[in-house]
Image (cartoon, rainbow, N blue to C red):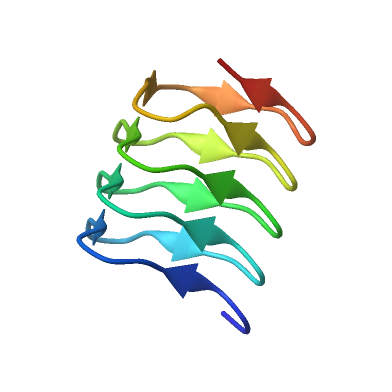
Length: 77
């Protein structure tokens, strides 16, 4: 979508939505069937497991694994 940014060595699986102004940082992996919502930040080295919904304006810590439903505005540690 508009203004989405996928950085160096990031990988995005099949059937994913990377929505407007989402940021996928270096070395992150977004597995199949994920939705990365508007303004969300997935920091470097993060693995987003298959089928995860990652809410608007959520932000993750670096080098963690995320799975399931992450609500809007969350800080994922």
